[in-house]
Amino acid sequence: MFPRVPSIHILCSQTVITESNLPQSRTTDKKLLISRRFTFDNILGAYELPLLMQPIRALQGDHRGDTTGFRPSGSASALNEECTMTYQSTNPFDGKVLKTFPTITDAHLETAVATAATCYETWRHTSYTDRGKIIHKAAELMRAKVDVFAKAMTLDMGKRISEARGEVQFSADILDYYAKNAETFLAPTKLNPKVGKAHMESSPMGVIFCVEPWNFPYYQLARVAGPHLMAGNVLLVKHAANVPQCAILFEEVLTEAGAPAGLYTNLFISHDQSNKLIDDPRIKGVALTGSVDAGKTIAARAGKNVKISSMELGGSDAFIVLEDADLEHTIKWAVWGRMYNTGQTCCAAKRFIVVDAIADKFLDKFQAALSALTPGDPLDEKTALGPLSSEGALVGLLKQVDSAVAHGAKVIIGGKRFNQRGAFMQPTILTDVKPDNPAFRDEFFGPVAMFFRVKDEAAAIALANDSDFGLGGSVFTKDVVRGLKVASAVETGMMFVNNISWSDAELPFGGIKNSGYGRELGDMGIQEFVNKKLVRTADMSAPV
Image 1: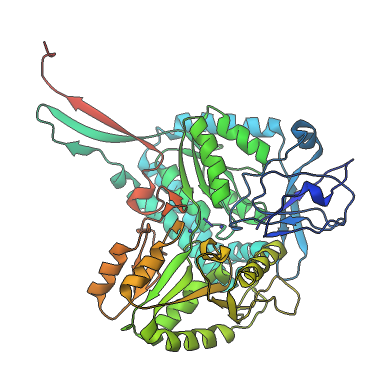
Image 2: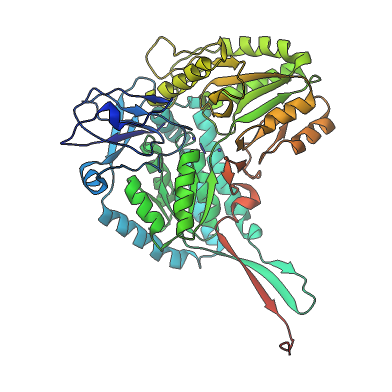
């Protein structure tokens, strides 16, 4: 929900980086002031060398997700021996490195997998009531420690403290939701065959491997832990490399709640280890929230191993404004929909499609509202605009805007970084983005809004559907019946009429097209990694 650049530190030796080793990409920023060599053939995020070196940043596509698809080219075995991926917490407000955690060894990973597999053999037979006690206790502990959890999130990835607290509370609500409802959701379903009796029953699948992004460090974990643990599965989790403190806190709260060893295991692992984990026969399913490229890589590897997977891969959601919309109400949602979490939300409003009759008024008010937002310390309750998650994320977003302008787009406001320390991006509005502009197909993962003026409702629907993504969207109109009609016509996994409020554990979350497949949350979310078994009894003779 980067679903969404992690700071991944690659420590190499004995070789030299050259510009020719890096792929040519319109979103690539090469800062090559180091004396080491490393080549890449699939870069999905920002890769930063240690502080004694200058950063290499190679940004491509959607920057919110974990860079699980990364793999070194050339002499792979030698490079894997030379290089170590480090999980590091760097405060995006001031750039200070807070904590660093190395990847675990292969031996430690094997112990973790074996422990999880052993735990599953007991947990799968644990009653819903006893499972629920642990998950509910974890929710209680999160609420009791809301300030600790929230501060760690703000320091790891820059979320404003008030939003961070809200995420902690919502994450606890998700855990409670499944602790309360799992047994009902997975109860046997009676069928009505012509002869005899039949029912469908649900059973867990085993050890599930989850790869999660940085943009919602606890919410993303809660929406896999709540349903899948209550279903009787156990989890191995690879969180994004720039939120290690959040990853540790979430694992610790489950342990404190009474989770047995192996029930939920946080893994600081490399991409090579991640790939080996997907190949491991003890892993029965894979869940990813991340970039489209990461999704393609992980889904392909899971498919090669004939393993079920779920993918939440981002979006470029349409925010449709019809001529009869309540403008004051609509503008408030437009600002929240684009700027919540500093725009780093997979289901944020990103393409503002406004019917011509009201377009000028909407644009004037929207521009004024965004221009009024000023940056500040995300730990300060009064701050209205926080930083992006990292310097790399900011650099990548600026290059996307520059590329859009180079291809004909116009900047109405913003388009630059703020002239102060920290990874702060000016709220930005782009117009005149034509279909041949790369920006037309891109996802802007930050405070950048694309504005489109259309003739009428039909044109708005057509433009909304002209996207490679299909996660969510919204429509604003005083006529709710008309809004529902538009919602049905837009090709997405979720549509909202006169709101963009997706923060409810009851509501299934997911999309279509390049936004992925599968659903999280609601009664559908718990069904992703369970076996649906048909059982039939009948007093009947075999056919002659």
